[in-house]
Length: 115
Image (cartoon, rainbow, N blue to C red; front, side, top):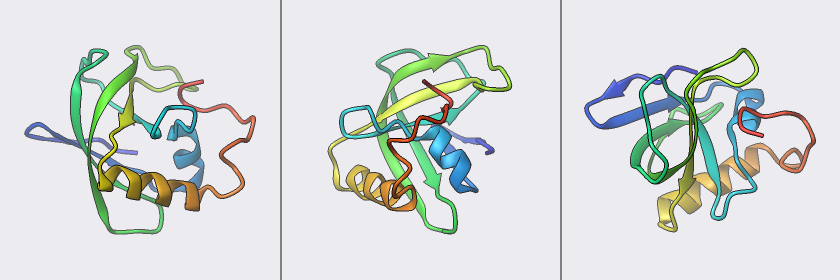
């Protein structure tokens, strides 16, 4: 899951359903997702991230807020931040697409990158 930076835009390419499951934050109001990053981020910071989801070449551009930070990565929980989706149509579209891709898995007890 690479995350190059282009100017102020972060990109997050999620290549498989297991990584998507580990990244999605279903418990966050409006939805949220973990974004791997070695850059320093602060809670409340506005971010813009372009996502690519498994099995799709479509890029989903999203504005959101940093709501969780893990600065020191481990093998189980990589460095990065949790991003809360907004209430705009793009956010709703990616939330619906993620939940479609993870149908039946969202409430699983398997560990994720955040909880």
